[in-house]
Amino acid sequence: MSKYNPFRRAAVNLIREDSWCVYADGFKRAIEFLIANVQSTYEVNTVIFPILFLCRHYIELTLKEVIGYGRYLNEAAGTPPGGHDLKNLWNEAKTYIRKEISDVSTDELAHIERLILEIHAIDPTSEGSRYPIIKRRPQGGRNASFSWNSPHIILDELGDKMKTISEFLHKVCNFLSVAQDLEAEFRSDYYSYSY
Image (cartoon, rainbow, N blue to C red; front, side, top):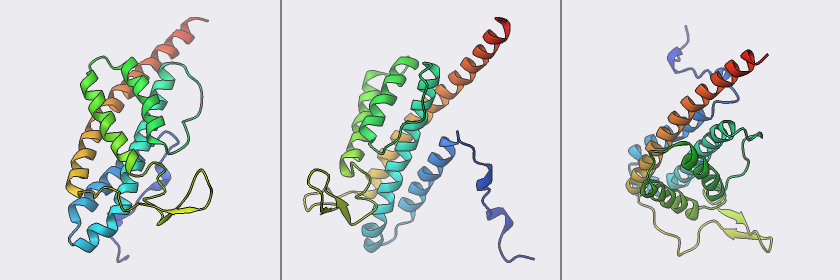
């Protein structure tokens, strides 16, 4: 008999190529666990880096999921977008959100954009949250990940912002997922009856 709990065994072999939401949800849950369990000043100042990375990566994966749905619905072929630039990903995702979802207000979209771009501005390349030194893009060489004038990050405030972003993106993904399923059914019926 194993000393390990069999219910704590992860079935990573069940993941498919279109499992963006499973990955994204894992990163979001990890953010919530970390923020909720930070106990000391030392922990705040060390786990902020993985928390920032998890935030960025959650947003990146979810925006790529939105883009995948949008591209399918608009018959725009292609692989999921590459890169880690949240601003670029948001701009493409926002186009599909505006086009496909009529009940998202301009104010709500602007608010979510501000939050996403705020997180993007903290660590634009995702390197700062992963390494103490980042590549200096224009000149080559290296720079410190964060400068002395980098903002202080309040974990609970970051958690609230991520909750707002994730609730919005969850709603968008659910809507677009259903729209994609309906479109796939329509295309299947259309092509089966047109021959």
